[in-house]
Length: 85
Image (tube, rainbow, N blue to C red):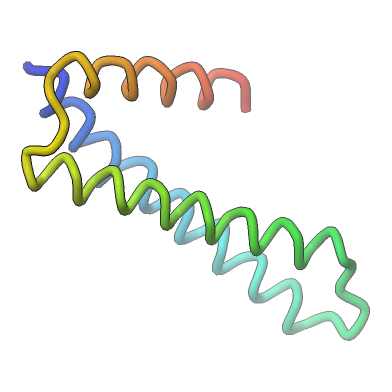
């Protein structure tokens, strides 16, 4: 499987659902709590920014704007990021 195919699959099947669930959970926490912390709001903003960044990466990938080397680098970075979390 090509790096571009692996990256597309990871973005679509793992990263997008993870961030959607995480953002939904944060929205619920903030909505359910009148005492939502600044940290909660900051986490929500950061998660939304990350989600948008991953969406842009996916769009670039689908538009053919990333070569296989870029895809492999991005894939390696994402795998490392998920290992650390």
